[in-house]
Amino acid sequence: MHIIGGGIGGLSLALALHRVGVPARVYEQAPTLEPVGAGIGLWPGALQGLRTLGVAQWFWDLPVCPFRWAETATPDGRTITGFDVSGITGGQGYVVRRADLHRALYEQLPDGAVVTGKQLVGLAHDPDGVDLSFADGSTERADTVVGADGLRSVVRTALVGAHDPRYSGETAYRGIAAVAVEDLGMMRETQGIGWRGAVHPLDAEHVYWWAARRVPAGQMQDPHTRKQTVLGGVEGWVGGLPEAVTATPAEAILHNDLYDRDPLATWTVGRVSLLGDAAHPTTPNLGLGGCMAIEDAVVLGRAWAQTGAYGPAFAQYEFERHARTARVVRMSRLMGRTGSLTNPVAVKVWRSLNAVTPARVAASMLAREVSYTPGPLD
Ligand SMILES: Cc1cc2nc3c(=O)[nH]c(=O)nc-3n(C[C@H](O)[C@H](O)[C@H](O)COP(=O)(O)OP(=O)(O)OC[C@H]3O[C@@H](n4cnc5c(N)ncnc54)[C@H](O)[C@@H]3O)c2cc1C
Image (cartoon, rainbow, N blue to C red; front, side, top):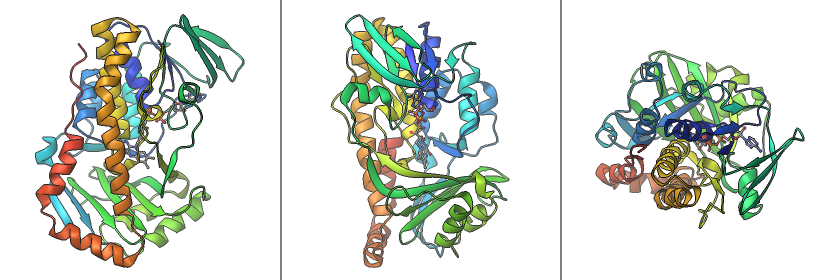
């Protein structure tokens, strides 16, 4: 199997296939696999998936604290709605450093399983195989291919044509800061007007924070302007966000516009399939995009182990994954719309509606999306 893309999804799939005895190699465009990203929230499905994949013990020994309480709050610190999230996750939900997750996956792979500096630029498939061409001029003939090459997947374009992703209307800033943490199990999203954000404890001395604002796409800034913009947007907020942003080196603040795509009817054509963001990119409002890439990998690994052939394996994998991933994309899109309102009247109405909605309703909506688990590999 040729896997295009060495992100969370590509590495997880390589590991799943390795565990079930299917040879697989990852082709990653980056020259080296450097530590990347800020933090990432992992829900029960991803955590069960990582255990199934045999991710090493050091990862489980990290000093992270499970989510205990989830709430939304106003910038002046008033809780809009809140509930016990550990009851949903069984204590299986927390934020880790993305770099730790990548390393934990990569370390379990056999030598030579990841080839870096290989940017796919073309793919053509026929009933007997798949021709891949890379930016360095090399070509390969593959038996089967999975595109795990993210939001702007070249593999996806070859399968279903070139279509722009849908801009959510929000841009996001992220970072990790060394600040003391008061409540390790708190997961609080603060919703202002046009801005929202959160601070998630990583351990007793570090937090992962994000902030998002409603703005047209493509307004990228240099790191210093970026930091000042976020500080201006969350000025005076209680809950630790301004302090976390202040404590983050400007050049370490990440900035991405947020996109998703409408669910595809199918993401497999013959010997080629898709996984993770290449198949079903979602906005990060539920914190499930990376989790679903891990879940995909476990399900495809199992499908391959059970069927032993690409046709039935890809069919079983898509059958198991389509409804879940499509629902998450839609639910996350809806959450983004309601969480980032810019009209003060609409914000007031939305907060009042939330305040009178029983917490168990919000809890059960979240439970539906985050309590999924992908099952075993065989
Ligand atoms: C602000 C933000 C916050 C998020 N928070 C969370 C969260 O808390 N929890 C969560 O689960 N998810 C979260 N996500 C979503 C998560 O980041 C993605 O869903 C996840 O990274 C998808 O993994 P992937 O491997 O499918 O794709 P990617 O991570 O995009 O990896 C794709 C890989 O393919 C490589 N590649 C691309 N094109 C080519 C090519 N042509 N040839 C070779 N290689 C190529 C890239 O270099 C990259 O390494 C968040 C996303 C954002 C933007």
